Image 1 (cartoon, rainbow, N blue to C red):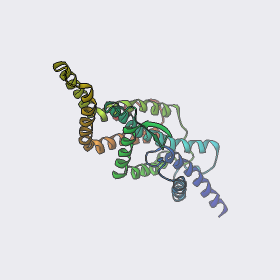
Image 2: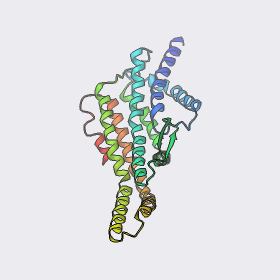
Image 3: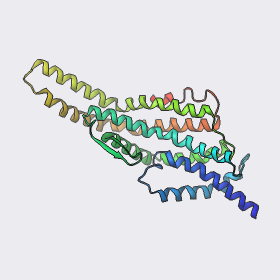
Image 4: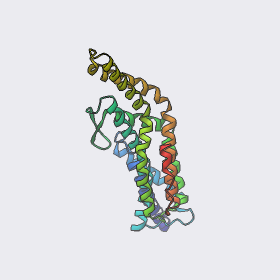
Length: 267
């Protein structure tokens, strides 16, 4: 019984390290709107329930060592850092839209990062969080985390350099995806600017300096409201691409695995 209890505690500790890495960075789970105690209880309960199962899987090594702890933490970080790019995409798209709405000087304190972020950046992130919750992507992430114990047995994973480089390459796709998300607003406001400029040339008496900003803002909000109809499909597709990339990196951390994976974020 003492040996079984020791094995259980070791397996629970390693599982807790993997789950904690995901909770620290993944969308929705990393939100500061969730109390720290609630996150700690959730991570502990998840580790407690998974420990007996994952310890019995083939090739599992339920022994607490420095390399095993680093490996389990690396698995959680691969999940968390990969999927946090969704939040960064929404933030950057909000920055682009805010610039076109003439809201570039309106900043708020982001509670998750404790830095000043544009007003529309916070709005885009909140809307993205609603999509994640409404589509059940948080539950899909937890299911993928449970499946990761088959691909990377407990205590047997080691973070390789290609995995880290894949996440860095994936970050480059954030800019293209953000441009795609904000493209309707960007195109509409640019057309308004061109129209106002032509009116100013045709009729110099018109106060185009006073008409430009209100027209851009109103047009941008109308187009943004209409474009939100495609947000769920867009965000779900990018979330699925990032989750697929994380699963592949955990299952096969070899050179070249990241090539062609995250360009799908921008499609």
